[in-house]
Each structure stands twice: as C-alpha cells, then as structure tokens.
Amino acid sequence: MGKFHESIKPAHKEFIEKQHIFFVSTAPLSGEGRINLSPKGLDCFRVFSEQEVGYMDLISSGNETSAHTLENGRITMMFCSFEGSPNILRLYGKGVTILPNTEAWERYAPHFKIYPSTRQLIIAKIDLVQTSCGFGVPLFDYVGERDIHFEWAEKKGKDGLEAYMKEKNMISLDGLPTSLGLQD
Image (tube, rainbow, N blue to C red; front, side, top):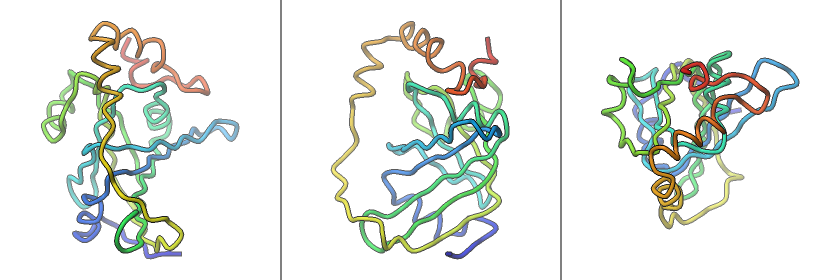
C-alpha cells in the first residue's frame, strides 16, 4: 500500500530531482470522460515548497491537463526510479494552468527554462504524497533527451505554433475548454 505523507519531505524532493521522466494524470468529472496520462521529460519539474510543485509544459497535440484542472483541479504526478533503488512516488493535489503574460507567469516562469514552444505552466498544491516500492518497475538506462519537438517547433515558427495551438489545444477530447480556449 505504501506510506502516506501530508507534504513533500526533503528525501522526496531529492528523489524527484533525480528522475528523468514523470507522469501526469488528470480526469474530467464525467464518468464518460477520458482519463489523461502524459509522460513528461526534460528538466521541467520544480518543487517550490513542501506543498507546491510545478512543471513547464510544451505545446503538444492535446491539452487535457489544462481542461481537466480548469474543470475540477484534480491532478496526480508520478515518479518512478528506473535505476538504483526501486521506488515510486505520487503527488496528489489540485492544479492550475498558468499562461504567459499573467501576473502568476511572472512569478513562476523564472524558475524554468522557457522555450519558444512553452505553452503554459502547470502549478499544483499538494495535499498527499504516497511512496511505495517499485519492485515491478524495470531497469532502464537514461540515454538523453529527444530534440524532435524543438526541431518541429522551429520549423513551425511563432505564427505556426500559435495556429497549431488554436487548432489542437483549445478544447479537450471530451469537449471541455482549456485555459487557452478561455483566453480568446
């Protein structure tokens, strides 16, 4: 079952900072809605305090996290070790989307490397931390980050990225608005 904590402890922060990948999960309130689970890489995750975390989010083919957190806030982030000791850590909380050109953006963005294709920041207030064994998680060797996204974004250019977001990132798969969709 694992151990539960009400906040992020120093050992949790240290574990998080060593991981090269994490997973984000959100869901709409509708029982018919689709659950979203997304892998995230790069050095894009930050622990701000014992109860607050965030990550830098790049433009991609969907924007489910923004839609779901806008609707209900629920978010879970999972880290697992693919090398060394077998561990899994889950952060449960309420998330919000922070968009460029806002007061909140000015507060959080300096903590991240912001790329031309950075779409938004996701910030979460954590109310539960779960740790458990990762005995079933396989061992993998980290080789490096992919640069395909950045090549794609460079080819699109600023106008192309904006058009892509308008086409792909304004509503969820289930028709819920995203924060970007409310911006227009």
